Amino acid sequence: MNRLFGITGWKNSGKTTLTVKLVAELTRRGWRVSTIKHAHHDFDIDKEGTDSYRHRKAGAGEVAIISDRRWALMHELKEEQEPSLAEILEQFSPCDLILVEGYKREAHKKIETRRLDGRAGERLTTNDPTIVAVASDHALADETVPVFDLDDVAGLADMIERETGLHPQRV
Image (cartoon, rainbow, N blue to C red; front, side, top):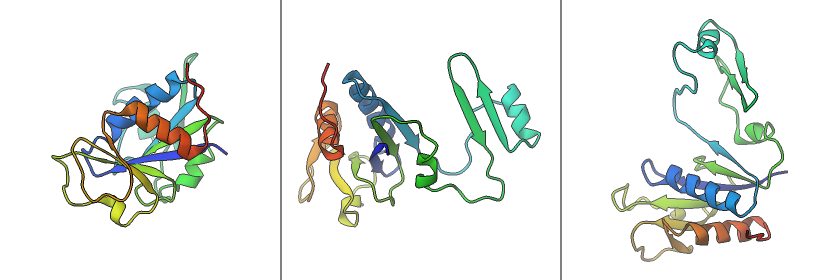
């Protein structure tokens, strides 16, 4: 089973920026990293007018796009429920670590991101024991978990390695 670690927080709190920086740092260290991004509502990864878009809009339940550089599979849910995180994880190839962006209510360990201009006062750590650290762009008082600067990517990557049992292999 792949190791799992999350980055969570309210909208515009810096989740995606931190996830991208952590992927770059952890892969620089030699780890094979995959990601899962939870999106709300409708989204498209193919653009109007592309062949895959036309296939999907014509009613195909699944559309695979394959080239000599990558492949992707899109699955239209239609009347189905959104798959659980566990069901999505079953689709992943082996890797050292999967970073999960979003999925606030899942039981894996997480970093909570906070920005001063975000939803102040709504701390996720208050009711979520799976949050093991906070990454913030401002000083925080009375926090019950370690607080890192939002830009301390190396420190956060070190903490993720410790929390997931990855043994550092710095390059």
